[in-house]
Length: 350
Image 1 (cartoon, rainbow, N blue to C red):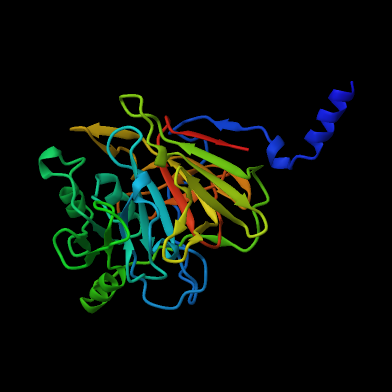
Image 2 (cartoon, one colour):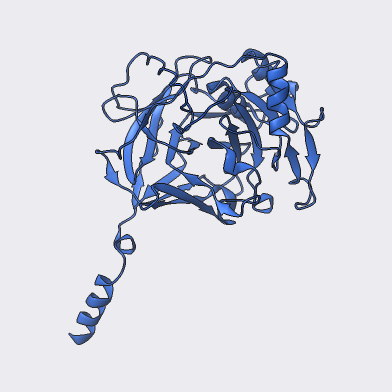
């Protein structure tokens, strides 16, 4: 009896998070949310960023770059200035890369940059962004998965920057090849402005209050499936821990908390979204079957989990994230991390 009481007292002294039950979210592509056929664009608010909701003055020049998501590629640099970061499928099952969108700020250098895949072009087109990468898949693989065809279809011919073929890059000494390639983001931005390339801002919706609905979720785990040989990609497994005091999530994987090597500080994310998309393969490479349509979305914001959806009405439209009632979800102001996942991606929270 005394032993039982001692164990009970010890349990009561544990933080509430340690007693929380881990809840698995069913993997699904289709959604039951009553989404609308279309959603109007949100107004551009002078002095406010359309990608973070934070104060911003300047020219809207969004640039998406490809980052390696392998253990030996960490830590990245320049990423503390990114507005939105994606984790996207790369090739086989389990392999992913990160995509950093710079719109509010353009660092002088950011990396390490790696090669492009078809899904990355889809992500860039969501923001009408310029796209920087180091090589790409061949045109011989088929129109669904070859990057040149995807870039042409997205009308991004004057917004593409292959860092293996132009001067907007440098090799850094702090990482070994092939993880040491920097993208000169600021230089690309200045070049685009000088050439008069136009970008259409598609603001997201933001709120100054915490979400009132949803289930409490202070730690999230997202794990891509293993590859065909049963081997997991350690860097693709990540947790997101909510810091209630600062209202942001800290991302961690096998390399530790996600930091920017330039600042040696954690990169905070105000929102974490798992965007469920139907994956398909052609010639051994992945593509997204319904990225210009709709699907389920697991939204984590302000310490809450909202079972929502996403909608995109065509290749020239923005992606809209909606709540259980089908209303566009109001994000917390700050950076957003979006995981492009399918029904096999394991997501849980507690």
